[in-house]
Image 1: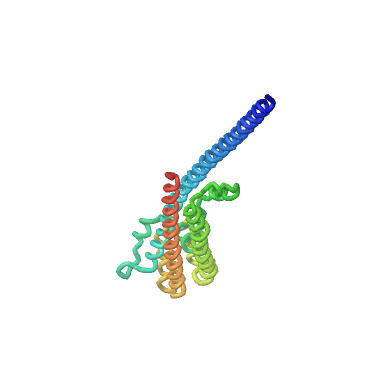
Image 2 (image 1 turned 60 degrees about the vertical axis):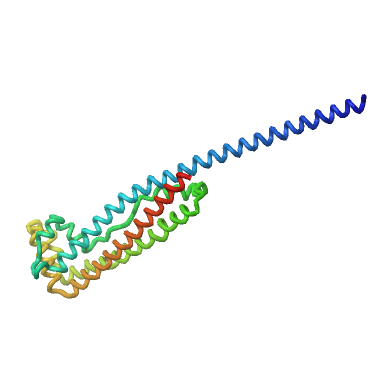
Length: 241
């Protein structure tokens, strides 16, 4: 009888132990499942946030590309006269502002795409939720490597344009004063600038170098856009996984 009671006691203890162990295991499993689900929701949230930012960057790059292209087009009119004569109509088709013409000579255009979401993800440590190594790789390539290339091109343009102001002030003050003179029309101002470019090889050489810098910057921007598209495709792929 004692042995039977002892066996029942041991069996009861084993059952209770197994019940506790099973409960702990189930609780642990449910907790892990909850964490996995939470991480998955956060992963998709981070990816969709980056995707929204990519669309904003695309719009920004399109605007920069149009503006930089117009800078080059304006330069070309002054550098390469059509049939040996200055084509003022080409200028007027692009701008009627003297300030706009002066801008492509002396002011550099920054490259500052919207990247607040990306920086917020980095600072919050949410990059850990992205499990795709390809997405991480393309993020780094876009926001570090490609971005730094465009910034470097902008810096080179800035340095060249900074030399224009003292050069124009000393050698072609009429270009400076004509822009300020309200009586000087866009036609007259353009003609004054064109005459200066055609008669001063130093100024023409500066325009040629500026054109090369702008074309290089535009080419680097195109590579940036390609990397942006690659990242967008990779994020779309990751969201479907």
